[in-house]
Image 1 (spheres, rainbow, N blue to C red):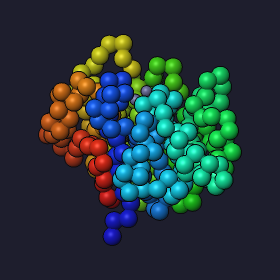
Image 2: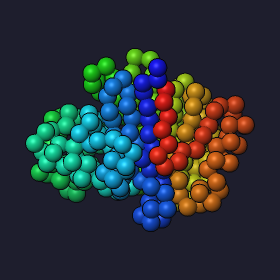
Image 3: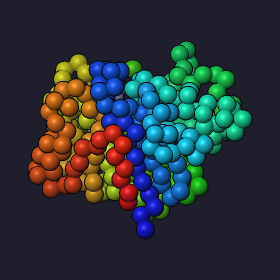
Image 4: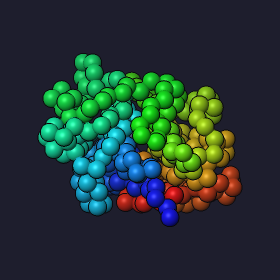
Length: 255
Ligand SMILES: [Zn+2]
Ligand SMILES: [Zn+2]
């Protein structure tokens, strides 16, 4: 029986799509070996969690890829809910330092006690929790926000998440190959100078290089929606021979 699942609470990316809710946002709910991991609780995450039949109380780990609001605007609401207003602290928060500490943190100070452990993400760090491992990978270049690639591993499954960032050649060697699912924040259909996001060309090169069993495109801007993510995914699939799909709001994969 397939017991692992990955649900896309939202698939929007970029300012217009997320902040006008043309697609939902709110991140991903990953259940890996019985561990519930909420990744990138952007705007609406709290609502989408319940709407999709989950419960914040079941969250074991919250992971934030970076401090931009499309990835963490609901962090406080979700922690408030999940910890029953700090009475029942959650096990683990994994996020770059600028999400939790410093001048302008995203996490409200009083909610620090709603988390048993906070582990800051740095390049190539290994975090263990029960039978799973979270690996932080390479640093992304992303508009002043500390951002790292992330891999989630159980004994025999590997999910790789490539968050937002500007493409550079090292991105063709910073991740591991052959993931069961590799998620790409594919914001733009074409490279846009001055924007620190991945384009379809960048993602195609990475898919070719890393050859996951399944590649999933998500985090779509308005120009990406106009280009039709389904068609884009089919085209990359034809060119690379890899199974590539585009995510839709509420999409649930079992593996
Ligand atoms: Zn961002
Ligand atoms: Zn983003």
